[in-house]
Amino acid sequence: MKIVNDPVKAQKIIKELKLKRKSIGLVPTMGALHEGHLSLIRSSCKENDFTVVSIFVNPVQFGPKEDLNKYPRPIKNDLVLCKKAGVDLVFHPMAENIYPQGYKTWVTVDGLSKELCGKSRPVHFRGVTTVVAKLFNIIQPDAAYFGQKDAQQAVIIEKMTQDLNFLVKIQVMPTVRERDGLALSSRNIYLNKQERQDALVLQQVLDLAKSVIKSGERNTQKVIFLMRRFIEHKNSAKIDYIEIVDCNNLLPVKIISGKCLVALAVWIGKTRLIDNVIVTSNR
Ligand code: PAF
Image (cartoon, rainbow, N blue to C red; front, side, top):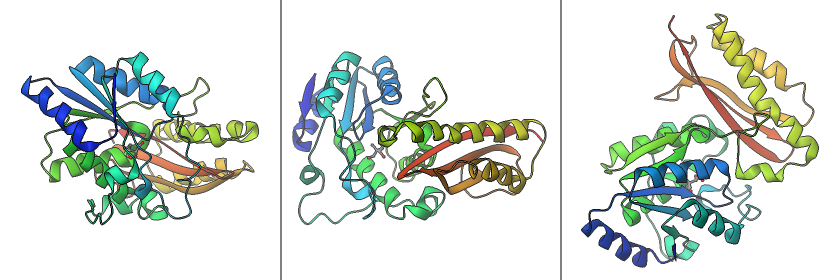
């Protein structure tokens, strides 16, 4: 397994692979790899000749008061996991490799980036799309793998890929959960024992939404009201948002019909967690 931090070196390796007509899969990550990332890596290894995992805690997708400094960086363990999983190349740049002095170019997907998480994280998606566009240019993957847990990120990256004519197939893979239902996230390690227990409320309230919708409720305000009431019983939980939106434009819907995304962000103590589920109704 090769480990490269210089984009120019990575590009040289990629150029040779392209000459040999090898297909390339990219799994962009910020490290602190867990089973969710590993499921993306496994899909990439299965579907491509060569798999690149990027590990880069992208500073520009964190707001000024967010957790950039404390974000976990267990690089040694990440490299062991990548090697075991059969990764061919780990691209692990430093911030100055990606944003050298005088860096000036940003990629923004209008509209979609302002919805859901964009309301409380106004610079987040601009940072994500900028770094992912750069990774697409450096690695030139045939396919790139993202998790459904970050549903909004996946929709925005699909839109960027389409709008900027990237020849990359975006593969969105199912959320991987702990046995008790908590969606895997690198931020789960911030939770203490009590908070870890309280964090189950995200999955529980999504199950509640699914079941009331299944029993026929179509009014989103009513579903959201029930979800709010359920979460407000947990002391350490503070709702950032609960929304039911159209899967494509991420705009709130009044009546559930067709495919909708039920998405939420909840603070558990000092940790902000997100989760979502897609619901389908035919009437
Ligand atoms: O999902 C993530 O870990 C990040 O947002 C990504 C896509 C690697 C960009 O930094």
